[in-house]
Length: 415
Image 1 (cartoon, helix red, strand yellow):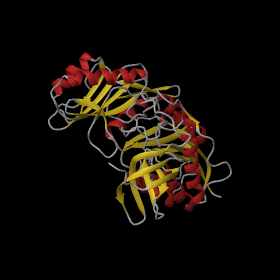
Image 2 (cartoon, one colour):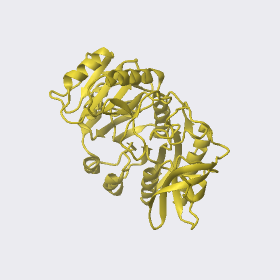
Image 3 (cartoon, one colour):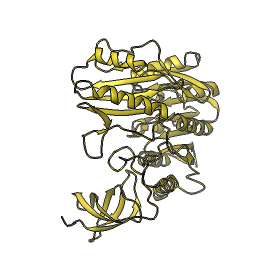
Image 4 (cartoon, helix red, strand yellow):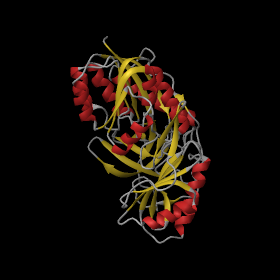
C-alpha cells in the first residue's frame, strides 16, 4: 500500500513529548515518537485551524542523534516518550524549552534557569503504576486503552522490576478482570501494593497474592473494611529523615531524584522565624523546615496523606498540620501575619487558588516545586505581577527518557 502522508521535517521538540514540524502548507504539526532532524511521512490523526497532530507513518530519513531504545516496546508504550534520543540530548532540549518559556514572559536571564540537576538514566523508579486488562498486566500505549503486557522495564529499579514481573506472571493464571495497580519498593526493600479494581474488588484474592509475593503492605481501594493490610507500613527517606507512608498515598517515583529535589528546595528555603507549606504530602520538605524555622504550619488536601504528615511530624510541636484543600489554606493563612517562607509543591493545575494569600499577606520568600513546567511558568508570571523577583530556578531531571521535567524556583518579595 503506497504511503500517502505528507513529508515533514521535524525541527524541534515540545513539552508533551512530540516532535514539531510543518505541513506543506505551513501549519505546525506535532508528531509523536519523532526527533529533530527526522524526515517522516505523517499520518494525520487530528487537524485544527492552526495546528495538526499526527504519528509517524514512515521514517524516511533518521535524525543523526537517533538511538535504538533500550526497551523493545518504547515506540508503543506511553511511558518513555524520548527513549529514542540520548539522555544528554533530552536534557539539552528540556533546558532549552524551559529557558524559552521563561524568556517569553520576561522571567529569564541572570543565570535563570540554572544548570540542570540530574539523576541516573535508567533503573531509577521505585514506584510504578500498571494496568490489568483481562489477564494481562502492563502499560498503556499512547491514545489507547489496550495493555502492552509487561516483559521488562529498564526505567524501573531492579528490585521493583522483579516485583512487577513476578506479579505479571502471577496474574496471568488468574481469572480475567480489570484493575489499576501501583507497586512500591520502599527504602528498606519492602514491597507495597495499592489496587483499584474495576467493579467489586476481590479482596481475598489480593490478600492471597500479597502473601505469596511477600508484600508488606496492601491497600485495596473500595474494599470494606478498607485499610492497610499487613504487619508494617512502608518507609521512605528524605535527606537524613525517614518518613512513614502507606500504599495509595503520594511519594516521589524515584528515590535518587527525590534526594536532588529536597536538597535543591531546602537550599532555596534557607532559615527564618515562620513558614507555611501547602501541598505538603507526607512531609517530604516539612520535616526539614520544622528544624530550621521557629514555628510553622503545613497543609495537605488528601486526608490520608495529612494523617501521615502529622505522624511524621510528631516530634515537632511547633508545626501545626491541617487536612484541607488549597483554597482553605489560603483563607487560613490570610487571617494571620505574613510568613518568612511559603513552600508549595502544587499539582499540575498550579497555585491559582492561593492568589488571595499573595494579595493580602504576601510571604517574604516563596519556594515553589513543580512537576509541570508550563504550569510553573504561569505561576511565576503571576507572582512577578505581584511584586516578586525570580531569584533562582533549577530544572531537575527526575524522569529521564520522558519529556517530563521538575523545576524548583525561589522568589523574593520586592524588586
